[in-house]
Length: 330
Figure 1 (cartoon, rainbow, N blue to C red):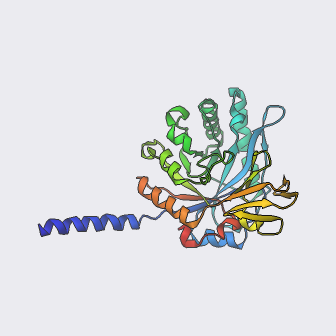
Figure 2 (figure 1 turned 90 degrees about the horizontal axis):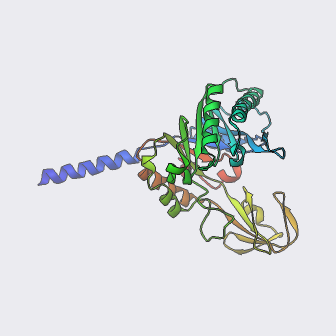
Figure 3 (figure 1 turned 135 degrees about the vertical axis):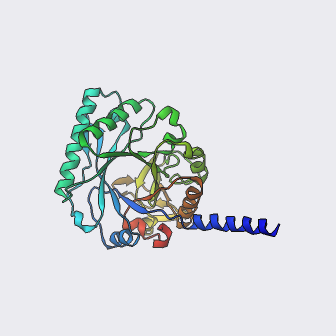
């Protein structure tokens, strides 16, 4: 009996120690049109031993002529500021590929590859191994989007990866499995911020657990993307809602706003905020990711997912990083 008890305790301690030592490599997204990596960003990147920076190079959307066009292109930048592997990310709106003829999709793949090459070359990046696409595709656009992936992989001769939104995981039978080498599981934006709700729409643990209930049956290798960002949900006099990405509570701690509850403010005058015009008495709810909430999400994922994965934080920006210690992000 004593031998059995000893053996049982040994196994428990062994499994526990293995889980404790299960570290995930940490990398970052960079999502600004003007690249400006300062000392704080470099400190976090280097001290967390990050090896990859997933940098958004441009978006693709339909223009007034109803043709796909690149927008919000980043300026060329000094890639030597970080000793890292740069991985270009292209955001593509769902409507871009909707009802697009196959010949146009082939042309789009060629243009994406050419522009990506051009931007990276101008920034001193002579070679790269992977292209990542970010698109909230749906059952109605999956065929065209997957064809775009195949065409881009063919023309670029690169590894192709893409983001995976939570609904694309839960409803994989409808949305399909993208023909990529790897996916990046977006564990944020768990609900629509324009719909009135008391829950944190960036990351709600109950919703995250529901969406990922069958994650271990997903037939694609993936890493995990976790949020560090914040946003402001602006409500006008008629109850209509607009979103301000990247808004922090620090920006509202002045005489132009009055705090009416935890993380909720009211405009005291007519003014602009992040290029959005506010009238007096518009309300702003600021949603953030706390170190505690981030730790809860990381612990859940570490227990839930039964395969190795890296963590990619969204995103490398001083205004968000300052709310976390290095230990919070390890």
